[in-house]
Length: 124
Image 1 (cartoon, rainbow, N blue to C red):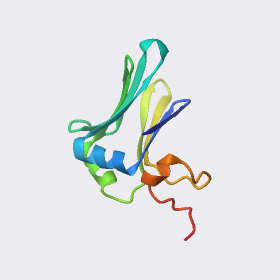
Image 2 (spheres, one colour):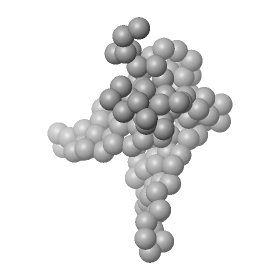
Image 3 (tube, rainbow, N blue to C red):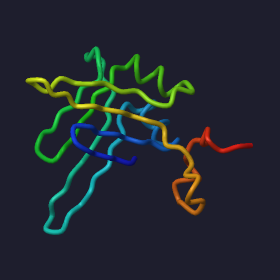
Image 4 (cartoon, one colour):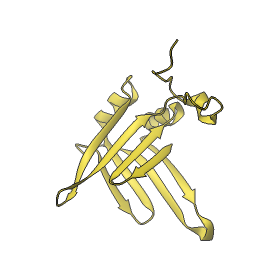
């Protein structure tokens, strides 16, 4: 699972196996280890209680909760992404986007290509 953060946006890109795991178990996560023993974990979790996509940061864990119905629709369809704009107080928002990862057209040797979704921009 790839993570991109910029300004007030967080974007997750999942390979086929990760989408399948999320659909089956309701959880997919990654941990980054740092020198000195620090870690940062980011995870996508199915939620039976939330009505919309939510996010929280607690200690070293970024957790995004996705309502079960939204997750089921996304994982079982051709839909590329799901997302939400979450109010963070004042006039600001946090943008969350969860997408299926496509084959990289510019780097054919990318190791993720073997498990990525076909790129719709690739001409047949």
